[in-house]
Image 1: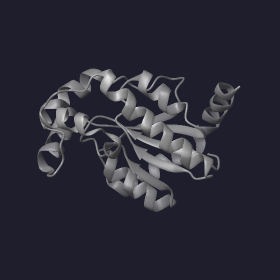
Image 2: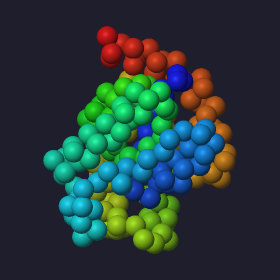
Image 3: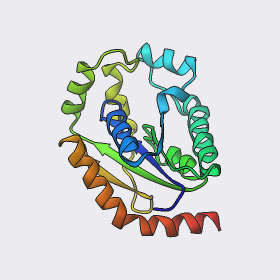
Image 4: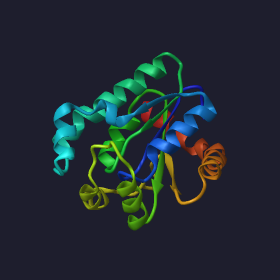
Length: 182
């Protein structure tokens, strides 16, 4: 990891992105942003009404997240941001932000995630959209900078495992970032 590293905690709704990213931010002392805060009112209204977003809905949202990462990078800050980042094309846009962008894909069994969603309150994303999220999800490819982690254990153990893996796996990411930047 370098001085301007940006972790994007990704996965379907209800997989634990916010919980993990908040704790990871506290542990590392890095700036944190919740991707939901970058959504337009129209996007939130659609999702709240059970309407899945289309790519045209997502591009301005993803661009706003990329811009936030780049601004923090310009200020020599490392960041953590949550973002579903369900498709490779979405991740490619986010990965083009300044600095080293590393994806942490949280995953789990659909029934476990559904039960988590059913137990939370005050969130606009209905459980009915979970199936469309799983249908849209494209797993991290071997050439993407990131790791996949099952989010089924205790929070602190999951964070420890992530940091251990990232401390050994990011050398290849740094080389890929340098190559992309030319």
